[in-house]
Amino acid sequence: MKKIFVVLTALLCVVFSAQAELNKKEVLTRIGQRYSGIEGISGKYEVSMSTMGDVMKMPVNFWQKGKKLKMDMSMNQPGMPEPMEMSILIDGDKVIQYQKMMNTVITIDINKLPENMRQQMKQQQGFMMNDAVVNQLYQVLDKVTIEEKTKGGKAYYLITVNDLSTMGNVASSVGMQGNQDMFKKMLMWVNTVSLFPEKIEFLKDTDTPGMWVDILNINTAPFSDSVFKLDIPADAKYMEM
Image (cartoon, helix red, strand yellow):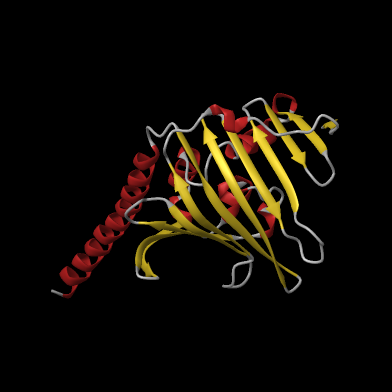
């Protein structure tokens, strides 16, 4: 009888484990289906980052359609008299960055970059929960946990990536290039109704986020391609990287 009980317990553990794995796949499938068929997406988010006791904030407006992504951002760095305004356009072949304070345009030919850097650029050509990110989550399910949580009276799927190094250059998807190696863990708060993320947190060695992203608005209504035109003054200086 004791042996039968042990065997049944083991079988139940296998069943529950399989169900937990299936639930993760089901949630990611639902999120992926939410994005399918969307031609363009736009919105606003704010990136906050702790640095030497201060918090640096960067509000970002973004528009993404196909291979084109535009971000207008304003970086409020502690000690600076005014924010540093910047616009970035990624069109599939080139990255064009205009820095307003320096009146400088920096262009990068993506096709001339090494393969690993081209792949990183591709990750920047879509919003945080696009197909590429969902597919990455599928591939590292053993490093991912998904829980149902309530926060501020709203229900969320809390998606935790316990080893951020398996997710490629995810931080760059929100305009924070070069910050990937600073963090080990990522928490994504996805609204269970809209299936869009509302908050993303990056952690290093503590439970306190070192960087977090508050997604303030997401819009899937059609918009004109004219938004992808950068407003660059005629006297701007140009640099090609």
